[in-house]
Length: 249
Image 1: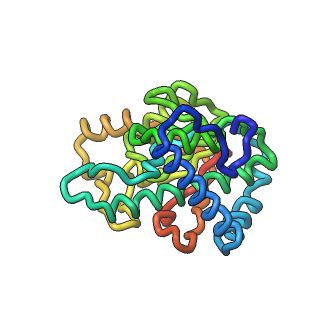
Image 2: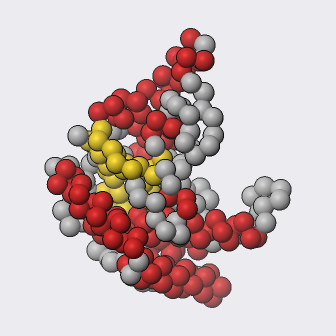
């Protein structure tokens, strides 16, 4: 993260007082959530999982992290009819939780991997979001810049990103490490265990099967060759159900 730690500090010169106050508020919330995480059972669950897998992960080369589609850290204007302020506040809390989880994973990975650069890309980011992430030493990219720097030494974090975008990631490269939705669900290969029906392969027409193979074939290839473990269900992090960690075997 460009030589900075995850404490949330950095310059905000040349911006309005309101924006600066919002950034500082995010920094305070982030520090509190990190502190709460490290003193909770969630920390032990994550450490136990990664320690069990670190021997395998140490054989990988990981030198950067790219996060796709984190979401807005600050509630703003409605995005669709009926999108209430309450809903946007809840969603922004989930986004902060996802960020904390990512940073805790990175903290463990850095014990064996020289991950110096952490990138974020999401068209929903506001100026406040961007400044806050930059205060953590991260770099915010504009679409499609993140796709252009994907390599086989990348750790990709994409919690519940649109399936077609995840498919595009795997078309470009086979990341060293991927943390996100179950790839079988991403490619639509079985019934979604979270409750949504996914079309089975044998119900598709031949032309539809060919289109899906073109779009999701790289996901299937990666999934077939990678090692995988399901992430724990973290207390209070209801969205973490279904997250999986994949790495090249």
